[in-house]
Image 1: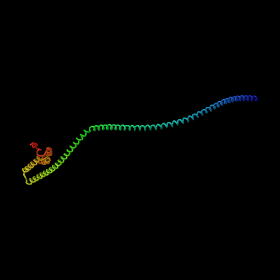
Image 2 (image 1 turned 90 degrees about the horizontal axis):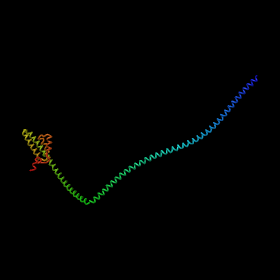
Image 3 (image 1 turned 180 degrees about the vertical axis):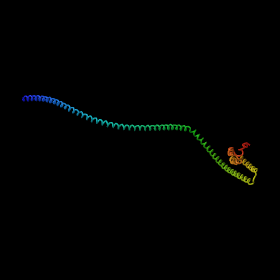
Length: 273
């Protein structure tokens, strides 16, 4: 019984081991398949990595080429900007030169206009010279007439100088006469003062004083009427005192003096006799 049990047990264990072995074989088969797949994947990955490495290498080469192109384009851009700056400066200088040349052209045009005007004036002067030459005889006659006029003017000038000298001499004589008249007026004033002093000392009556004043007034009026203009103007003050004229009346008397001299100035009818 024990042996049968052991055999049965061993049989069971053998079955279990066989099943386990089968399972292990199946597992090994699966693992082999997975290993094959992994190897295949590894090979594929390796191939892809190689491909990616080649792509990376190509991209690096492309990047280097692009960097070179970028640097080249940047240099070309900088050179273009520099050329543009030079061109802008050249254009500005050209514009300045154009403006300067325009100014010079304007000045030259103005000078040409001035020269044309001078040329036209020169032509006119030449034409005038031709006319002067054509009318030279007439000019000579006119020059002779002008010379005669100059001689006549010289004679007139000499006559005027002589007249001026005569007038200066007459003025000197009149100044002397004026001084003489001033002396006479001073003497008359002194005489009047002496008469007034004598009348005050001798206690004259009012009738006698009026008689003296009347005689002096008559004397002054006669001198005023018969004197020349200058002496009459000097006697105006004495006459205004004697007649007790106001300043306005004295001014009217002065303005009424005629510009003539002597008694004929007051009585024009005497000039006709």
